[in-house]
Image (cartoon, rainbow, N blue to C red):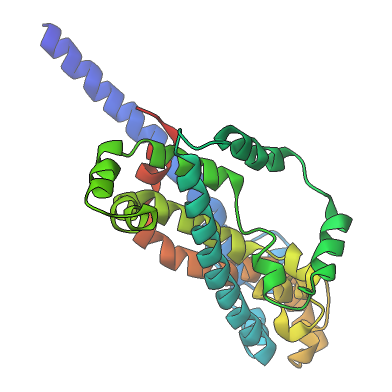
Length: 292
């Protein structure tokens, strides 16, 4: 009877769990599907609120206006370059810093940790940061985008916790075999850290891909803008659509669904990359966050 009761209880739990998870999936997917539908719908249906999950009056005007502009592809290429370079630099700096902080015998370790944590809550402010970047001659260059945000303290602490959980015996054995610190990091630690590295790459890549304010602040030349600034300028009514030769009717259509088109154009590359690193995501975060 006990086994039967447990079996019935477990089946009830499975049923409730399935219903709840299905509801979560529906609630999560609905806004995204609605955005897709709005991006392909005509302006009059969007303004009247008739677009739900299926496009009404299928229309590609906004997509055509955006992708027909050569500046869009220039800025898109810039975004790819900025993201790749910034992510590579961020991963090198974060990995090295986290590995150092994971060594409990390091003198001054506590001070270095607090220096990093302090920056999570306090910063110099917008104007001092701009003056600093400008005085270093970084404005209107890729370095103004990639260097000021090269280390995320959250990512740093996650990687530090992950490295602390690795068996110290492996590093000691490698040291006995003659490997120096860099050899241990490159040949022992990093191969064992694929999960957290993939997770951090995803975090950094998404952050740099979606970033627009730093470029808006430090870049003055249109050909250097990332695609997020290009699309932001269209939303703000700047000259992006006009340069593409859009007429008044086309601009009305663009104004109606530009936000949906913007989201679609910026999120597609991340959606394409995410499945390849998703299997590392949960394990990377949990292994770096839970000690034991």
